[in-house]
Image 1 (cartoon, helix red, strand yellow):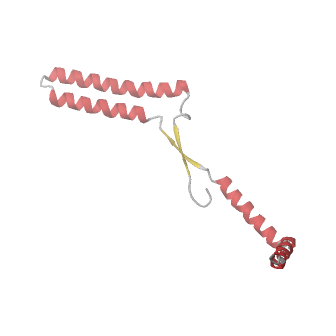
Image 2: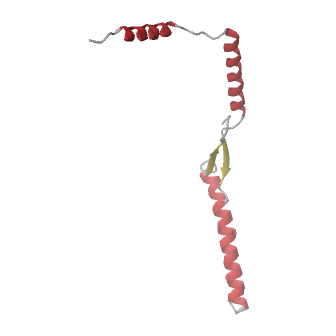
Image 3: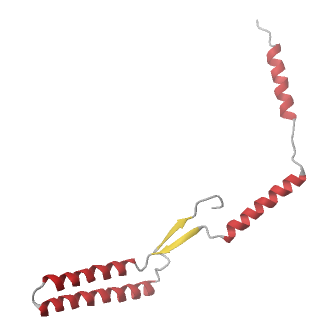
Length: 125
């Protein structure tokens, strides 16, 4: 049979190392706590996310679309009265889209729901 004396020596070293308890100095502990509290205070001061409101996006896209349609009507339609009439309808629909968007957002109170929140990245984020 093998001699288990080598295993006993390792076991004694392991047991001895498990009994060692290193306690940091109170000054070091207090300095680390102070640094941690300062970082937490800095994080609380800064907002964690950047908010990007998008309530106006449908209104802008509607206005751009109907402005381009009005220009297209003025360019392509040869009859001057008919082209002004079509451009006027496009202008009217664009303005109506602006008013409907503003009224709808205010009545439904959805400005906070139409927000993209972008989280900050970095060391303190």
